[in-house]
Length: 362
Image (tube, rainbow, N blue to C red; front, side, top):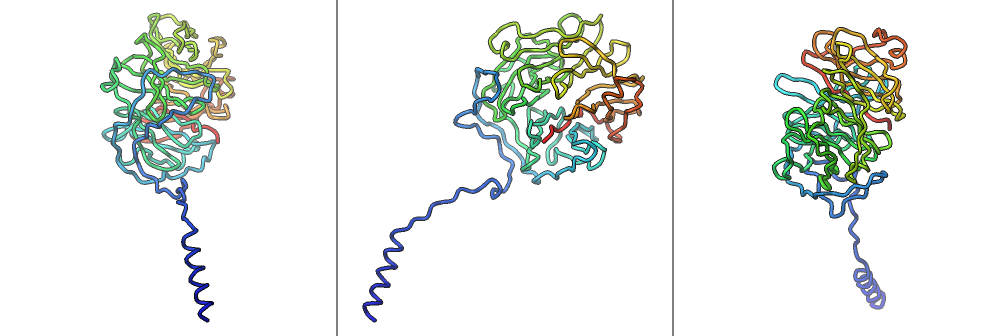
């Protein structure tokens, strides 16, 4: 009996001394989602596109954020997908999502003062928007944080950071730094690092969007350069190397406003609004500026067209029912006959609803 007891004690001692506990890193699903500033990584990820960027500045996070309910509710995508847009509330603008059949309207900017000019990340999990700087709403995990970027702390020449647009590979965000009407185009990483300037002209229009080509090699934009607001397409790689990167795609008799807002999913056409015929309507053109086709014919103002991921529909803003709402049209039907037969209203709100952007296909 004594021998057995001694062996048992020795076995317990050996076992306790010979094992260690390896900490298990928490998985993403086990970490409660919180709203924090986007961290500045020790090493910025390399872009996966063919564009080579040479950062002019690396920024450190400086902002604070307010915790929000997480995660955001998931929409079903019924009726052809999900659309984000800005809606005028009693005192400010807010970002909403809605199914493309008009159902399931959800507010994204919960717990913060406001937001407008939304734009999706290519995976559809986040929405970047502008409101006193550039902010990102994480739809998948929940929460809103600010990109640590400001005019004052970074000596940017103007004073408003607007028109954010996520690159198709998710590595970069284009934005316009403007003075109230026009400015210049910059790129920055979603974590606030690697800022680089693409233009030095101070003539990019505040009213158009910055529009990436599906392959991420080009940016379309609108600018004041010939007495009109015309549409241009920039080769991003050439711009980064300091070359003559942009080509003018429209050429209208003044005074005309050509405002580009969307690139077709197949890369062949641009959608834009123009008052070239005396009233603001929607148009399409090939990316070389040829074959301009009118899509709408309505006494109201039709603006901000945005293509659905399958290329069959276009969402847009119009005041044709008394205030600005979001509408959807069938592209091929509109090309055949721009009589608005295919147009349907998506929103019905006392305030203005503007700037629709379709969530990318999964």
